[in-house]
Length: 127
Image (tube, rainbow, N blue to C red; front, side, top):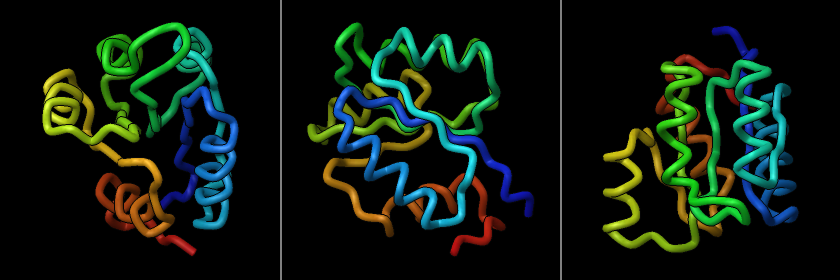
């Protein structure tokens, strides 16, 4: 399995981005970028291919759920995983209906992130 999966982390909280970034690096994922706003997210996705985007629901310049359609237009093969501290059934259902392929609740564990990666890439060899 090609370990060159490219991941974008989109969250306005720096500590969340750092924790997720470090978790991914420890799992053996080297191609990780970060964005703190919806605008940065779209710009990066237009400039670079990402296989997975971990996308916070609440961003300073927009609703993460509304961003899903845009990301799917830019890259129809992208795997958008919503990240939120608010795991209401409505939030999860709405995100999935809009095209998200996963949902992770904050605070999340490295084990949960590894399971999400394996969902999309079953042959992925994680450290």
